[in-house]
Length: 331
Image 1 (spheres, rainbow, N blue to C red):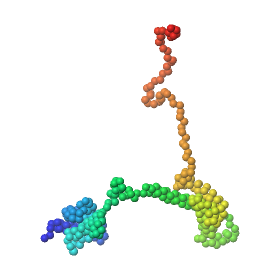
Image 2 (image 1 turned 90 degrees about the vertical axis):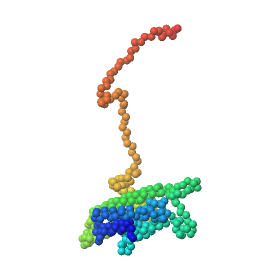
Image 3 (image 1 turned 45 degrees about the horizontal axis):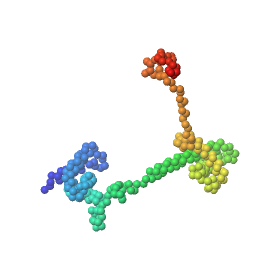
Image 4 (image 1 turned 90 degrees about the horizontal axis):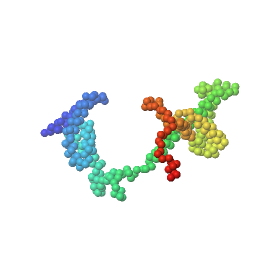
């Protein structure tokens, strides 16, 4: 004979199945409300069974975790339930047993058959004791005291590299602009003008021959390598001269000119204002000179408007001593 609980569970699951959206359609508010109510009814009917299984699996000390696992088991049972194969009460029992067994293996590892054979014991990493008997967390033993310092250093290095790369890109754009303007103003001979007219328009860049633009880009790439290596990585003149194929004196001239141009770019571009101000000495704010303080109250203040100041002459005493001091001394 079917119990009332079994019939009530079947009715609640039927409500959930009826209110599920079909063919990928969005669920309505009414359907969601009906499903939530049916789930609540199922959890209410399942509650005594959950308490029984928690005690049976020895998880009373982890009741909250076990209750959550049982709720997950009920949701999975509802999603995978097929009324044509079995009753829901039987199907949900096996789902709850599986979740509780999995939880038991996670929190009580010494209950596994393999652990019992080797007499394994569960040890909490959050309740370790040191040589003095003081308990502490496992994280205290593996904490890296220099982690914050290294993280801040790596972050500052990353930001500095990004700012340096952006500053060099701005300098390269500056060189390219100046170079293109110089090529556009350059006077051409008759043969060069005739060759430029015959050249297809798609092979010209702003009226400049593509071959000249390629030479300019090669020069800019070489100067970028020199500037980046000399100013930002501290490479020697001889090393850069060997790498780029120019003389050490030419490397010095390029870096000197680049340093001046980069300083101007950093001062003019708001993105590099911090870098531009880094090398400037701190300026002291001018301090206001202290004026002469008056011992008289300020008559303009509201609480001094009723006050009155009058000048008093020298003090004259009318007191006459009974004995002349000279006579007293002669005695």
